Length: 363
Image 1 (cartoon, rainbow, N blue to C red):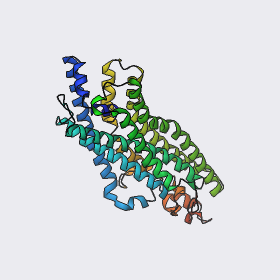
Image 2: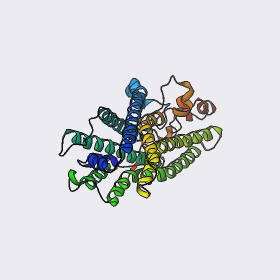
Image 3: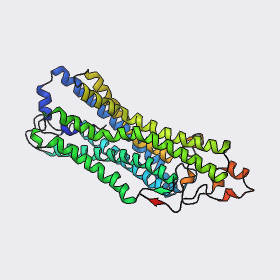
Image 4: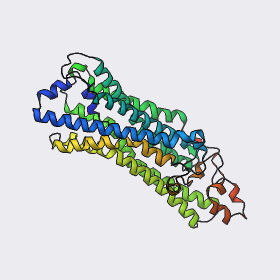
């Protein structure tokens, strides 16, 4: 799980401040919830990482050349790689930090100076936040790229790297600076405005993805529909199924993303609007964060990459090539949709790519 509050946990006086302001019963509740949260996080990280390895590693480099996989265009492939990689690295950080803290190697109540536990806490927390922030921005770039490719354009590579890697780093550094300035000895107690700013820095990209990606996906699907009509000169049940599959794919992307990060938004809303609200509500959101945040890696692999070919019952959902018109490598339409090739063999269109975007404008 990840939340800006973990940055404050790494402060030298954070644990002692909490200890002075809580009763023994509250301390026991905090420890119990903390242990439960860490155990859930470890289990989910292991499940998620093993699931990603099962989906990705056994099929090697041929995975991205699979004509039956959704969104098989090379430009979108690079973004999919980044989405899965950032989620996997963030989950790895969550796993390592949770295991270390389960071994009770978190910042000590008796610490009066900086030690290895504080350094590990800072490094692991910044690592996790950075890669999850990268994940948010790559999700946004994916939606933008899907729309632009459907319009025969693409995002410039330098702009992708700036938005996908550099800007999240700036956000992450900004959050760390606002938390630890002027020093680790004085980061608690802090002005609530600074704490709220950290929530905004980390969760603003989540809100942007939730609000803007559905609109971008809708426009992409509409562009796909127009491209199909232009290419075939008609809009039959075959093309309609193709467009419906595109809509389904985009819906799955948004559902999985929202499910994984909604607990974080609820937790932030509680902490910003009414920090004194029932602690049970806060604890519940923390446990759900530990449950769902690590699963983003597995869900991303399922939705973007698909499942192995032998899983026939899932192929119609995850491995449809309804976006093969985005593939600039000339996927044979007859391989992807036999129904299309059989119905149009006379015209010869089954040997052509659905739509070819070899010359794209960069923005």
